[in-house]
Length: 194
Image (tube, rainbow, N blue to C red; front, top):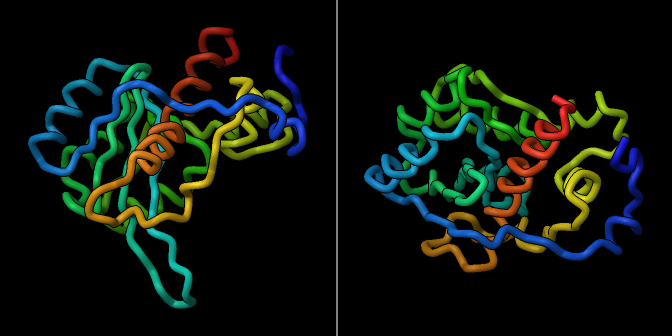
């Protein structure tokens, strides 16, 4: 086995910081979504993640605000808080032919289903794959360290994902979370683990 089974928090913290550095497209209109989906069509799998504005008070609830879809060389940040969850996205997540790969995505899917009714197909949970490979520590930070050999920052996690314009830090944070899912899956596939 080429990767550590049980990486400690200290070991993760000693790794170099890494992030997605390619093009990011913010999708906040139906036209932009159409263009994004045309690019996504050509790929057999995509990394995905979501972001929601945090609620710091009991009883306060926010709907998922952002859906990140990552290809090898491009990430789309889909502003669900601005365009909703259109039919084309529901169809993408219902399609079994295209794999949607993520980490700890059960809640992400539940939140997307609150926006619109759909039945998810073609979903790949990297935590489960890692567990099957004997990796003991789950989560995006641990799996990135285990399989890709760098650490990612979680500093933007609790920022406002519904703000009118996302900051550059938010965009890179969100893009990185989806992109590492794409990269982990691709690496495991190429090395014959899938």
